[in-house]
Image 1 (cartoon, rainbow, N blue to C red):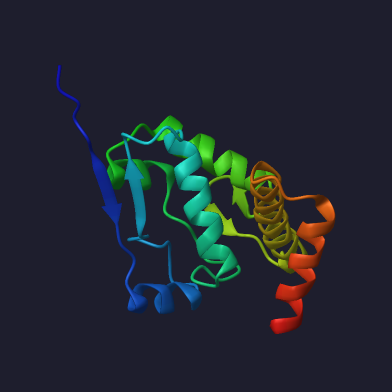
Image 2: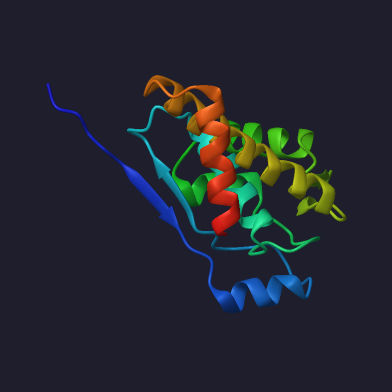
Length: 153
């Protein structure tokens, strides 16, 4: 039995991002990497990567995203998968979809972005605490270590 591994990569150029930030159309080439061998569902891979692009500023407010059909064609995946990713992004407040016009990065989502970043840090801290406990550290030792690290930075 053989296992086929597929990875699709889609790129967006700096010039394309600049063109889009001036409102001249949808992003044509976003750098989205899809791994069919990942345990993470494809729609979640898309969500994570688009959120990251929004949070780090590669996709600016009001930037038009590729259409569902266009992105699904470029990534060689089902349009339903892209639709599900866009629906989740809209539900989370990262994008808005205007029927007949397309999907756009939501305006004024700085608070949302801060909250996402805070959740990410919280998750990493929880993981570090869990690892410390697995190593036999007591909570007081973990706190002391945390304080020590905070003092040196």
